[in-house]
Image (tube, rainbow, N blue to C red; front, side, top):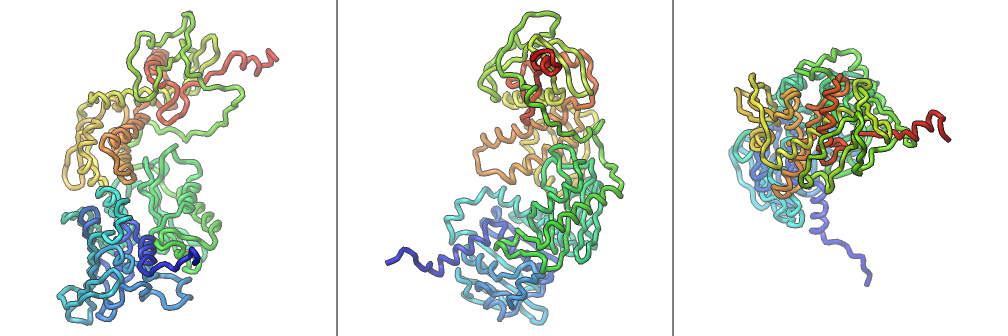
Length: 591
């Protein structure tokens, strides 16, 4: 007897269901796409326990009659396509006829629906094979109500891989947010454990939706894109060059009103900015592409998130051109408070590796002769969390400052070039981390509290993580509808704009909880503390700041006290040494 067997139908269906339904948000996605295909203009989503216990979607679409309800949950049953030709001309969001069948295979599902031609609706419960168990007449409004309970109760192997309720719900709210942006003419409501947490009313234009979903600040710093290339249409909004975010959470791409994930499209947008973005900062992107259905393939994965373009290189060129054109003809003045001076984009110089060396991580001592002596000699304490040994900076004589960016110093070993921004980052980072570790974070009360507007995502994050924000030195309180007030900030960040830095910290918390695994609270705090501490760069001495000798001396003294003074928190070197011998070779003084 051979080893190859024909899999039982039940196992095949479980495998197929697992491809379509990966987590609770997959259920929500499939159901709201069905509602959109049914021409609904009002969609309500109810979620309990992060979607693990209950997901209910109510719409006012065209509904289904009794005959439709008898077959709608069976696999490969759909009203969207009828022939193989239709498969290459998809205009609807759903078309496979797998969504409801996959849901029934892993959860308990009930569907109630009513069409405008009937006086009453019909409610049907289904078994795991999509067969109706019973049906009763019910009094409901036109449209459809789908209730899904106990997700993965029939697929326990998948259940153990689900994340916390907080993580699962964050995926759901992001999905609803994105589909709200894709469909301005539809109102979306999201309820979590009985409480409404998102309400996006329908509107006549995309900008109104963006205003509601992302708030005033982002909306006022967007510029439009509206381009046509034959039968390809590209429109939407991108942020001005001077307005960027710490994370990519504000980037959304739609193709023929379908929310998709496309690295190729995002990369094309970045190319359109042509290196005008600040390092490690990201633009806001809400971009809609409209192409002939035959020029795209959404049939490469059951989730329908991935997409292939027939003429990908041409499309990338069109997007790049559209972004660049929009940036060149629109007012790019940022309309919110900005830094005292915005740094110019940093150029990437290729170092001459044969003539430059990173300062070695070994203690160096030299005789004192007109040199500044950093105060590490009397500074001793147990090793911190950054390194297992105490590294030291050699004694240096300061020469001056170059290009308002680098400090030049020397000793008998050679010429030392110190990056003032990277050095200040390291100093602030370690101070902040040590204060957090000792529960002794110094805060400063603002003479004039900062009042700001928060979008729905930010409001939920503030409410959920108010304790964490307090831990990081931010005393926040509500200040009217959609508004909050910052009363205190960390002392270490007192040179930075409070609201700009706070928004970065908040974005970091949001993105962290979106991606995290269910680790212990202690481990979560350690990871997140490290991330928040890197925000110290906003309070650091920037390139372009002219420093006095005293300021340079103080910075080197502070750097010498760090556990790891030789790199910034992002891993860039703070100090580079060019040996005298190497310099003499460069000037042909020695062989």
